[in-house]
Length: 108
Image (cartoon, rainbow, N blue to C red):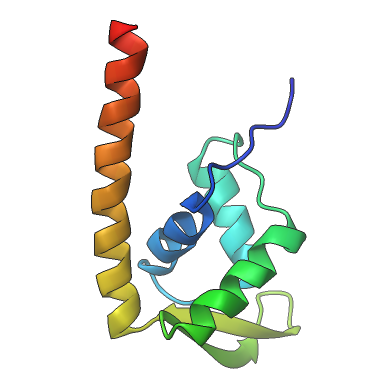
């Protein structure tokens, strides 16, 4: 089966939502999204890290160095106050878009 592609802009939403549960390092973020999506969504490094850097620049997340479960040095990301506001806005937008797509699929 083909790998599903994330809709443009949904990766930031997913990352912000996962980080809403607490700080995680990059690999753990990707693993969490994969697990929560019941193994459907796969977030590649080439997409994840540019997204993290972009969100860091915008002030939505902040990094802090720590140690992973495997004893490796890792950068852990956590939501900022602005990140929580952005998450709320993006969830609202997602809900509107999902309803609109559902309407088209049911009524076309």
